[in-house]
Length: 492
Image 1 (cartoon, rainbow, N blue to C red):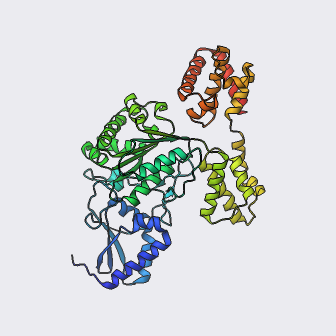
Image 2: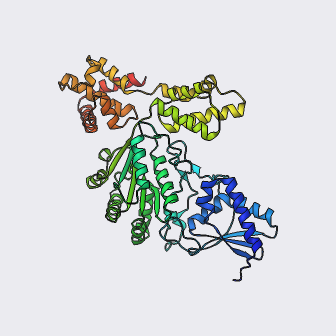
Image 3: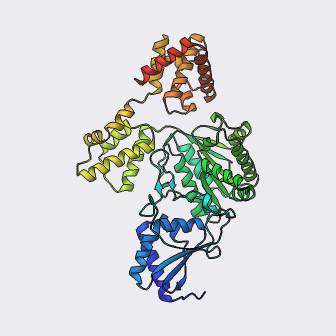
């Protein structure tokens, strides 16, 4: 069709792009707005092109209203704005295949979409964020012939999760250094990189940071980041539609494959089979793989032994529970990013009392700040205690390994020092195993962390203790009663 082009239209688009950039920020602009190209105008309708279907849907859901309003203010003759997928206009920064799509008119954002273009966050269960969550495409409603592009496969990244915003301390310095090395390396240095640790300790933050860094520094590299659950979803859909060839091509042609929460494919034998072959293909081609889970590869239950072996073949990096110093540093960093001056005593109070995970810690600071701004009260330790009374009570009830060792030692009439000693006498070894079992059940500590608290023992020793106590619990009713008594005493 005849598309009217004019210098004035180009100037209008440049001005509107600048306004969008200033309003939504540099990260959102680079990810979603900069790739758009002005195609032309006809009969009062402006046409923009984007490289992928996913980008088209995302722009429509998050920037449509504002863009239409800005263009209407700039040029009243523009009555509508259409966006189309045009693969040849601008190559995507990362992707596999893309498909032509019909033009769609901008509509109001879907329910739950962010008003400012920032991905909706999953809080606080695991997202953190984490992962920003895009307005999801209902894949079941797509034509069977549709092939997902790289952007369709990859989950959107949270712009807050960069290396610059990651606070480094002793508990996470090794994982951080490994993540930086993978992001910087032109060639694979260790494959895969396997990050593991408890909830809210920064695994997803590092995953997003790696993806952001590679996309910004090496835009030609194809990066796909998604959850293990999403990988399984794509695989099941490919099976249902008898389209596994396309599935294999999509996932085996990326440069960097990043899968979060690998533990969710436990027990899914078919998915593990496909993941195993995808893993081997990418490693053989020298492509990078980055994975995360809540446990080390050896401790993942329901995972095939050959897959565990592959996962252990790379670099396994544990993110430990935060220390007081690290928590204080995280609060200070967050306050600086928010542009707020928080009294030192308040941050010290939060760092001391909320030790479970980073997500809960940052959420507590958000609550205190929001309360102060909305009610007009000064931020102080007293107001923090008032606002966070429920959270503080929950943290006070959390059991520590030290408390478990003390209670178990008293119950079995042994010394606390025996918990960390090398003695193997049954009178000492059995209570030690019980304490390890309770530490696994009642705390969020990882197996290596528990082992370190018991005289520097290996995580496999803790695993053996847990299995042994579970066996005795099932076989010996009196032992099971003792175990339940100890549990109630610790939790009460």
